[in-house]
Image 1: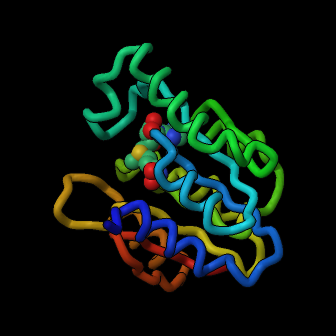
Image 2 (image 1 turned 180 degrees about the vertical axis):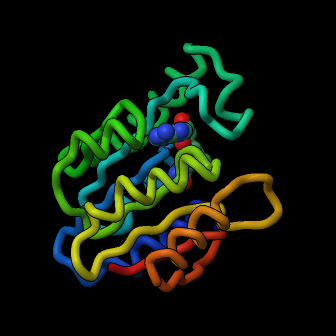
Length: 178
Ligand SMILES: C[S@@+](CC[C@H](N)C(=O)[O-])C[C@H]1O[C@@H](n2cnc3c(N)ncnc32)[C@H](O)[C@@H]1O
């Protein structure tokens, strides 16, 4: 059975598979369903970024209601799922903003799947676009109208202001090439 994380990871992989040991960052990891698949399917390096804790600005009740113990279990599931690939993984336990301030480097692809509110997505794009290598990709999840979130508006406003073309992929993914 193909699940949504398969579709998302296939979208990432087809964009970086021609690159020798591509560098990918996933912003918002949760239990690592996508991280695990990426590492299984391609010899890439993955930066996994998640606070694994309640964030006041988080748009989604699913990610607010958890206790500290629940978050620890979620994080442990993400980390144990990729432990076999530890030499190809860096884990940043913190927010997208803190990670962007910490990692002064270029990535072949960054996938935004953290806070889905308008302001958060707009900020994430501002943080991570400068870190995309020439020819690389910035993308994200949940470009969709059936949820009360701000992804479409944030992505479209940024693309319009900067004259950037947005490509849409499977499982509500969006993509911009640098
Ligand atoms: C939809 S889940 C990620 C799913 C994952 N990308 C996958 O495909 O399996 C959203 C995650 O974003 C995280 N998150 C929320 N706000 C964040 C922020 N400001 N920076 C980084 N991650 C954030 C939440 O803790 C949650 O684990």
